[in-house]
Image 1 (cartoon, helix red, strand yellow):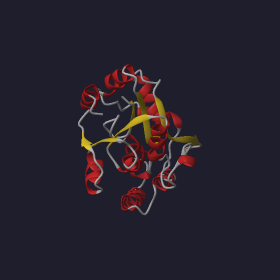
Image 2 (cartoon, helix red, strand yellow; image 1 turned 90 degrees about the vertical axis):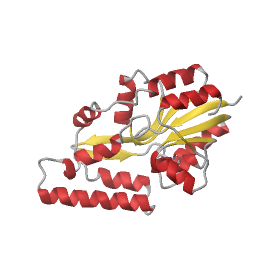
Image 3 (cartoon, one colour; image 1 turned 180 degrees about the vertical axis):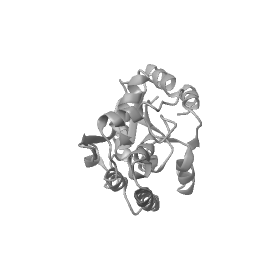
Image 4 (spheres, one colour; image 1 turned 60 degrees about the vertical axis):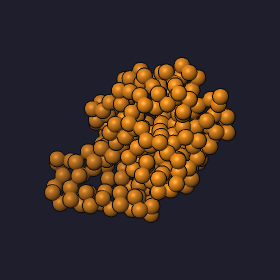
Length: 229
């Protein structure tokens, strides 16, 4: 039986909430109580325009991240305090530990940021999991994104999950994508098994990509136990 590599999206999947999106909403002028009404309206219009262009496919994820971060004002302490308000899906840690005990690889692949992913995994006792994500650097209140995996990208992603899927398949693993959204599409085209929810499940159906819906990591674990993953 082939070894399994579970490639897990973070925002909206391992974490029930999209923390990256909430981070942008909170630390742009849109979420700043000190900003004027005009500044909040302008920031909101700018963010909505960027999101619409991204959903339409005219803006890549790396460009989206760079444009959103240019609108943010936040220092590192504020960012970590913000991350403290979120938690992982309670079914994820039991899934990860049992999957590892069965010889599987469990990896986090994210277009989000390392500062909140690493902090949340550490609080859950999962700091040993491999994480591939984007990064941010905090300088004088500015949020500067970095893309350490961009060289392996499709050219549009900051961290192309499809490239990671190809790597794990080349190592002889049966790859299982677990995701929910736009940033998982490249991986959905490459993985052996796709477990999807939200917009990703609808998109896979429209693209005729075989995908199975899931509600929680408890269900994912049941599939792994049955050999269905």
